[in-house]
Amino acid sequence: MSAGVGWSGRRTKVLVWAVLLACLWLWGRTHGPAVAGAQGAVSRVRTLQGPAPKAAAPLRGSDPVSLYVPGAGVEAPVIERGLDGAGAVEAPPFASPQEVGWYRGGARPGAAGVATFVGHLDTGSSAAVFYRLAEVRPGQRLRVVRADGSTAEFTVDRVETVERRHFDAERVYGPHVKGRAEVRLITCGGRYLPEEKSYTANLVVSGYLTASR
Image 1 (cartoon, one colour):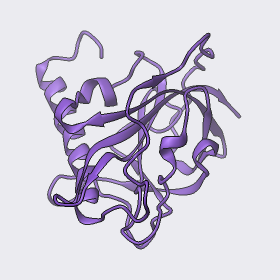
Image 2 (image 1 turned 90 degrees about the vertical axis):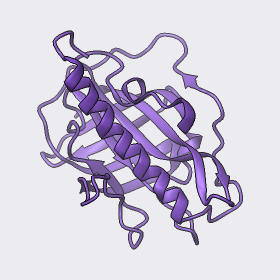
Image 3 (image 1 turned 135 degrees about the horizontal axis):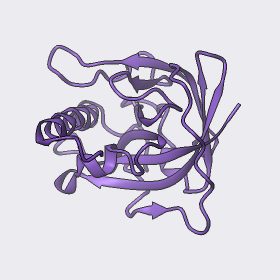
């Protein structure tokens, strides 16, 4: 965050991301795990070890068309999501559980800032697009095909489960390095609590732009 952003700007950012996270928790409250093991496999932060690939210069903005995450078996179309009437980020429709939602209020993937993608873990009856997201490891790559025909390639540098009790919106959803093009993939995580019909956390995969074509 630049030094010129005052408290009002920081408060607005935190409120927006808190709303997004609350929406993701709501998915867990209305749709329990479809298969054994859907409670989330990550219980600690994993970060990139060794020399990190050099960050590529941010690209001109272009909307995302599809998302590819080989480490999680994801090859999915991307749809735009905004805020609903209650002020929460719209989740991808359960009628299309293999689609990924891109929060259009954030950055475009490949442009400077953080592009945020959200997807369901399950639908209550079957695995959904981000069911295997916990298998992603730092150092792996993911790709976003953009509307201008280019592909932005990101290197994963952080995988973590963010507990509700210790949620830090600025750390998780704000840029890790100022001026860099970054990405976040988010789904339900932690433990599923049947009595509350809720997950205890969200799984967050972070990456930064390292190539394009």
